[in-house]
Image (tube, rainbow, N blue to C red; front, side, top):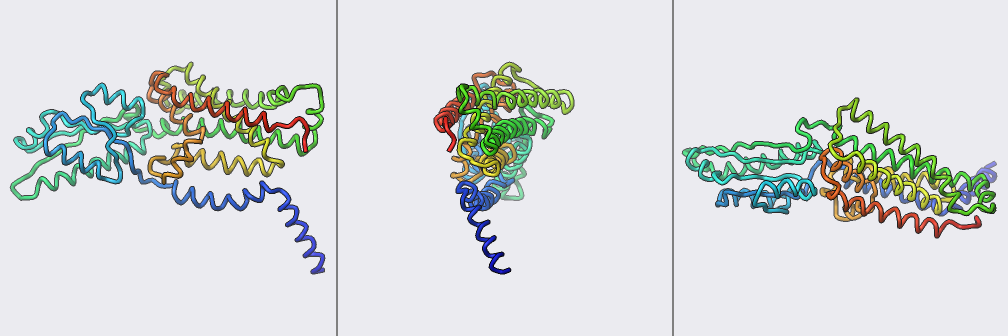
Length: 369
């Protein structure tokens, strides 16, 4: 009986080892999950680009700016000379927060014992904006303590917070673009890869490939239903978010649809690429989970700030289609920017689609092994 048990165990091991890709994913998945959840999941925000509009240009304001720049939370990226430059910089997502010192800041502080400092934050991501404002306020308070070294001094610096794009700090403004990116890549990529691999497992794909129909026609026929379903999902999400959740659509609806269609094509081509590598549905699902689901949540900026992550994860995030889609959708939908401010994101997504489709078509074989 023991001998039979051992022989069956041996058979099961051989069966598992036979699928190389599945074996690699099973062993790599725990390591990847530990690294992602250990380093990517963090509510602390670091290395955020900060801008300064210093119209006072005195020793006090310079000391505050230096303290902000030396902090682990901020990196001084921009020095502005006018409010127009500040607005332009926010629209390009070059900074997360801007500090404004008016021209009478030092004079008011020294003669009236109080002065105002304006903190402007991009609140399209309300959690990040709230945290950044708190960081800046604390650093300004520490600078104020240094000024009030003696009992005779009682200077006061009053922060005036201005929240752009989402003054009510509604979390749904940030949540909806992220959910759109997550659902579209889930339906397009995962379902497409599984459906094609299912045909391989059943042997029906081989019958299709030996028919007079060209492979490209077969591929288009396989992905077309998921394109239509994804477009319906897009309409549903936009309708619910606008009429039920009260999330505004401040930008051009036309360009929102154009961006979404490009992202759907990227997701479909990625699913096609996975199907050319995976030999079983299990492998396709594991590939999708490893490459799409967790990275789409953790490395896209949907839940956690990418700039606060280790450099290697920041580099990996650049190859996540969801990161570029969510960033562009926030700009178009929440910030209401012109399409010229999202050309970079759209260009990256188009390039990804071309690369994925090219590789997939080359790997798609006329005869199945």
